[in-house]
Length: 151
Figure (cartoon, helix red, strand yellow):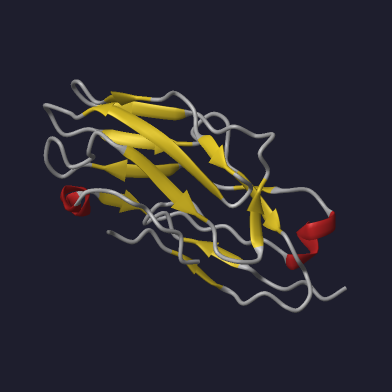
């Protein structure tokens, strides 16, 4: 069986190849903790793969904006929407939704309701992981990085 390596997840978000975060420019000052995970294109017929927790750490208070933040998977991948990842806020006053909300099978969002007054962090999937799988194993899906990009 030929296993194709699909995703080297870089938690720069950190969720899982050109994922897009839509947010205000102030969020660009936050630092993410890299996380790596491989997903075989054979997973289209098998189990979903749990991703490492996605960690976003503010470098200054308020770097994570009060907004609905959305991440999107690249073509060829999908979330296991039965595994609803938890969201943890650490930092004075930083608050928001306790779990992700899936946008179809290719994206998710969280709602940050209050910004921090002391630098904090946002962790997605620390207890219940986000899970992904290939949505189509053929033709071969390209390997690459999942990047969180600004604006």
